[in-house]
Image 1 (cartoon, rainbow, N blue to C red):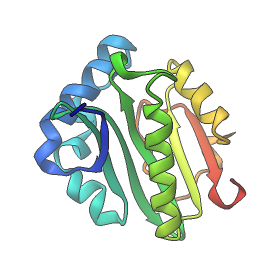
Image 2 (spheres, rainbow, N blue to C red):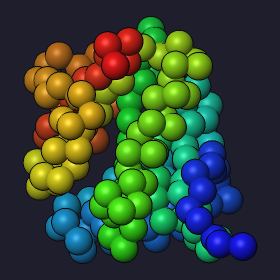
Image 3 (cartoon, rainbow, N blue to C red):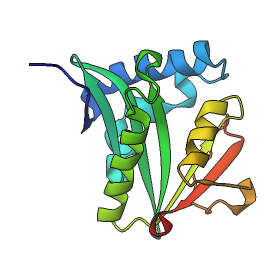
Image 4 (tube, rainbow, N blue to C red):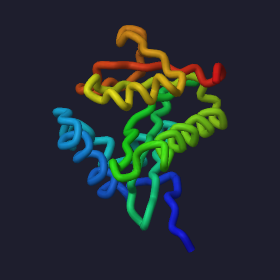
Length: 166
């Protein structure tokens, strides 16, 4: 049997693996000045994501989390994408994991009547910005975010996607 990456909802039992994936990408690979203290959501995935009407998915390969994407439900048919990361050894079109993660999240949104997605990112993450733009996200000003949008201190670029226009 060939072990292929699988996308599945994950919770607090995977928190340590999620942290071990995300922090080095943020801090070492991209030099984003953010710590675990700035991201307490990673320590309680179930309260921060699942309890909002959102979810948290991991790409599991060889019993290890190699990719993530998360959704926070903020009400009024709106959701916020967070924590989209893929281990550098599994990035690119060859694997297509980022696209699979995003498609999985969008299908979940459709099933939960979430019609508008928002996200914040950091201008240092050029490839991430290109990815969102290729996938129909439109750049918006911070002032145009919904009032309930939970802004992270490092974020300085914001996007919106109307799911029904896909």
